[in-house]
Amino acid sequence: MRSDLIFGALTHVTNRYQLCQLASKATRKLHKPNTRLQDTTNEVLDRFKDTVPMDEASEAVVEKVQLQERRAA
Image (cartoon, rainbow, N blue to C red):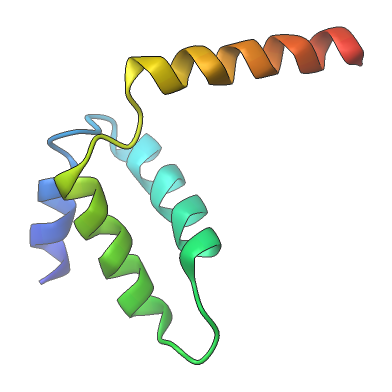
């Protein structure tokens, strides 16, 4: 059931709002034509359950990119 996938994903992402944002972005990137969107969403949540989608290393890279974008603007 999807609720089991959501609670499994919440072990790595503690903020539910952030989980929704990450899941929607990942679903858009991983979705293949001719497949059900629900299956892609379940796959994303299953991946979040097994791995940490946002660890400290990726947060530092995101902050660095955002800082560079601000300077360019």
